Length: 628
Image 1 (cartoon, rainbow, N blue to C red):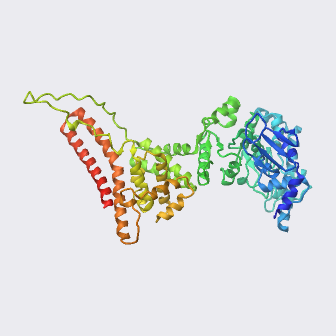
Image 2: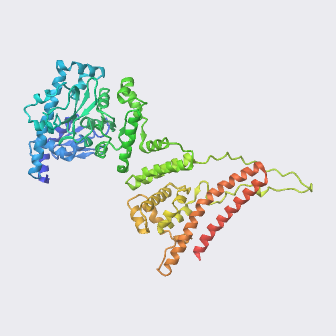
Image 3: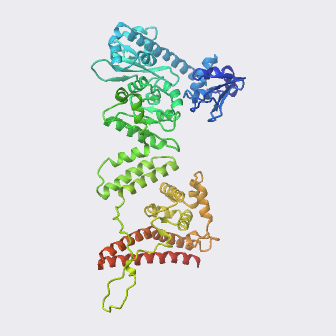
């Protein structure tokens, strides 16, 4: 359909905004305007104003701003078209149809809504009759009050194959079948789908009945039965209780996703109104989109049994490709074998909220799941863990979020598998060695016993110093092909500056995702990210004395210069990675030798000292050769 600006302006002009907002928020006249406490953030002093003449609202506290349509989408959680349709119905306007087929489809859906609403009314009537006594008794045992029963529209489908069909005989049988109320089987008379069940209406975001869920009363299978997909109902695109939870979430700033509608109802009975549930399927991408329209980090609170935890992991896997900055999932873990109904019955709303206070972010849930998936005793098992975790990160489409997940997993892997270092012996004050031979000879400190000097070292345990990191990243920006072949070494670098560490991580992720990346292509990837300014600064700093940081003024001998730069960059990376590890081992070897004073310890210490000195010479040679 085509909604012209003129038509939308006419719609807005027919709606009194203060009246619309006043249905759910207490408004107070203030001169020519109205004021209220903002429904989009918690406040005690009204800062939310409504101007009927101009047709907009504005909050001076949180900057919420909009018109009648925006109010319906933001506060009610409706889609744009659903908001327009509801306002148009209130204003007595016809929504333009794109073509006759669309108009016919809308008319058919309206007719089907009459069918399911008629069924809902009849089911509610049956629950209130003498036939509904066992069902009412069941609800009472479940702790569901009459007020909650009416709010959610509970009903009863009698144990009959034709009672509903007879009650709705004013509708054609074909419509009853299409709405899911009857089952049609070849060569048999259509019969009632729901029989001997407690009926729970399923509503869309506008609160209109579109389908039903039925719980069996007594023995039998299936325990729960939902309407089939119809022109009104697509179970993968609907969340139970969305119409009530959406406005409630504006007050609590949260949405709780539970497994089923009885969990939602039990929470509502306990005073927790911001819960929704999928309808017999794993949480879908469309349902995640509905939830993220309300809050950026919804809480998944599935049952504490194995099936519930598997469902939580399926939702996590489904969400990974859709993650974007600020939008994720959190997980509340219930005690084993318990569901939300059990918790609120035993501990009340406070007990359930206490569990919600201990939610686990998505990255932690993935980590805990994979670590618990199997043993980690062998190198192969540890490598498998790393592969699984990085595969989860790689499933994320957003580059920034993907990078931070990879970094988070690497940090946890490093902490989990870090080699436990023996406690370092405290350095003791030097005392002379006992005299040997000539008793008048005095001995100074044995240089073999001294730990490596640390007064001016540029590379050490605290991380590589800024100039060396700057030279490295500047070289990798000029020659991104070095990123892929040195990936493992670069991930081990102890980069102390968090900004440079983030930039290096993003570069590694970019090179891993795109083969054959050049300098220009890498900068294009980095441009929308906050690390871009740092990257361009390092690329311009060509005064650092290494061949891979030098800007080529002409194409003369460019191939040879490029080959030299890449060779030097590879060697430079090797030195930066190796020297901190060698110095750490040298410090430990010196401490061991101070305790043992044996020849083997001395040989090990001297061998490591020679390796350290050789690496320092190589680093100096790389700088000197580039300045020639």
